[in-house]
Image (cartoon, rainbow, N blue to C red):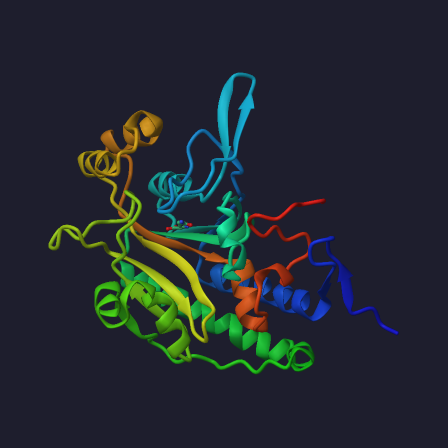
Amino acid sequence: MQQTLIYSSPQNEFTDLSILQIQTEALKAIHDYLYEQKLIQLMPVMLSPITDPLNHETSDARINYFGQELQLTKSMIFHKQLAIASCTTKGIYIMSPNVRLEKPLKRDSGRHLIEFSQVDIELREVKALKFMELLEGLIISIIVRVKEKCTKELKSLGVSLRIPKRPFKIFSSEELKKKYGEDFEKETSLKEIDPFWITDYQREFYDKEDPKRPGHYLNYDLIYPEGFGEALSGGERDFKYEILLRKIKERYQNPDVFKFYLDKAKEGKLVASAGGGLGIERLVRFLTKIPHIRDVSPFSKVPGEYYQI
Ligand code: ASN
């Protein structure tokens, strides 16, 4: 008999091979699409003196390297901004492994891991809508590819996939909050049948504040339907020194930590860009309709668990 389960770890024992076949096809679709779009692939940075401060609390994964403090990257946002600024390529992407030591209470969210991968993308000198267009094309090409190449696997998992129509719906966080309260993202995800956007979140200093509407942000999350929740977060970027410095201070963060990056901004070496990161395990979970992200990949690490391997 053909072996259809692959050894995973004591936490989730086995992962269904159909899931990994779908993941393989999805990753191929991502590379092919971004190649066609003429984006340049960079290799991941896993250690850095600075990393994404994030919009929610996690513990830092710090390492002492002969007296220098480095962190495992939570996202490559600063590297993306610096890389895109220095050359005239249309855009870059990285298959980026990230470590975010989430609090144990995220254990049952169904979509958090303390290590995961995202395809982290940045486009040079474009507005939010251009990035959103690229992303919609990416999502559709992944779904089309998986439907075409993984018929057997989808059938064995009992999944049928819808191909979403473009443009995806766009909601503002303000309008959804009025309608559903604090849980607006979850509520809307449960109601919708295709992926959709939510714009204007209050978050990290690097996301661009709308110059016409202070306190509002030119950023976006892509949300999966059927309760699967957040797929991607991203935004246009602020890149001017005074603005970045003000926003860092407003968030009670220490500008000294970001000195190298801020110096580049001061020298006028950053440029306008827009980007975002699409979580790979979350994508596979959505494509396979697996309830908990733990079961999507071998050796997965769910927050708050004891890991043996
Ligand atoms: N990668 C995201 C971005 O480009 C940031 C994140 O992962 N928090 O905006």
